[in-house]
Length: 331
Image 1 (cartoon, rainbow, N blue to C red):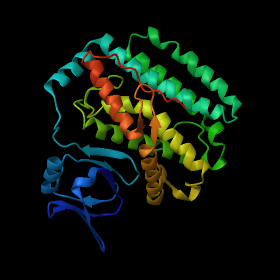
Image 2 (image 1 turned 180 degrees about the horizontal axis):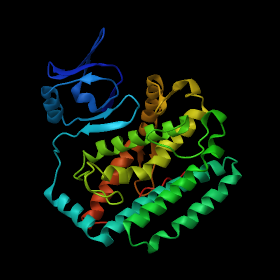
Image 3 (image 1 turned 135 degrees about the horizontal axis):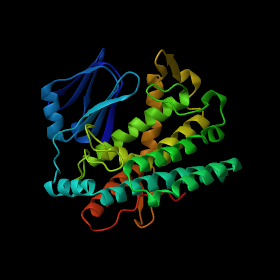
């Protein structure tokens, strides 16, 4: 089974003996190309055109992050499943406002319901005061069926998410990880740093899965398709961020896997140290490979497979085969 490869060290990536080869100070390592699904680069890595050609030939996408852990961009190889028909259908659903709104509202509905499920999960574990946040999110969501513009829809989605974030201090209950308010670019405290890093990982994970479908990542519906490179991955990630990233953050803090010493202050904000990124990604990979039973599928699937299934559901909606209903966790 193919797996992602994460590179944190500085060095050189190249093609050697018809496979991938990484060379760093005192370290030389072959990376079997047939076992590699995608590559994440966190260190300072040199590579050449011959290596990129090999990635294209091997259908391997590569994501880059800067030293702060911010997503920089991706090497998105020539699509091997691209479909003119699917691009036309995606564009049709973007240009027709009612069709675009239907999909955009479905993404917001999925995100809202999963955020609510997260809060209900912790409510069932004794945090009764979460009820007022759930009620407020319900009230905000009630307005969505009547909305007739994407800008208003995004504003309400933002309000729901702000309400949801407001409950984090009750769930985490740790003075070393106070949320206070959402800050990004740069995040100002440890919990915001974890959210930003986790969300960036989620966007790239969805992008990697889109690469293995007929969908074009440049055409999103909630996030406008303009001069930004990719937007569909941002739409789909909204559904999974609460159940994968936020739950992961709560878990690694409660288990004391990440501690205050895993962070460092920079004049631009709070940074996650490299060893902390490795711990976070290790836990993330375990969560993505966790299998769950999903209603209407009838078998155990991993969270990573679930993301691919969500993309297939969007394909069917766009082709007019079945109306899209977003995934909602069944905890």
